[in-house]
Image (cartoon, rainbow, N blue to C red; front, side, top):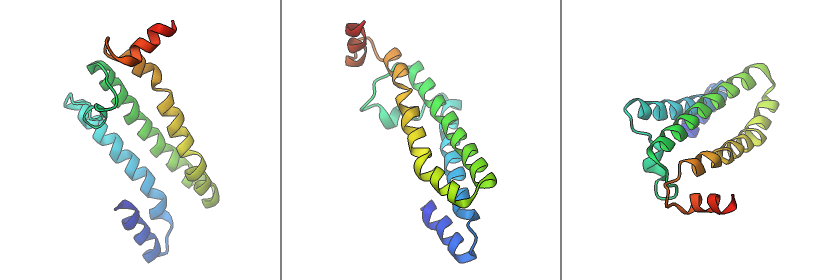
Length: 131
């Protein structure tokens, strides 16, 4: 939906600003939703991921906070890149920068997943067996 709206505005008004703002707005929206869930003491990643990730309550809060902060970082990075660099560089950043950063950030959460896995969880057993 956002792609259609911002893409349409970009084409209609012949102004690339709207397509460059979309990642900032989307990332800030994701961050706001996650922060909002934390404010009402409901880490919103838990209902989304509980079927594939088992964590203690504190682990869900920390994971949600980290992702919210990461989305803020992505929004700020997008703002810096589109404002201070060429459009070609911004496109390269979107294609070859954001995805690797997201994958690396996700991989960096493995320690948290191990630390806050429930005691009987397979992930915590694998960690114990490797020690």
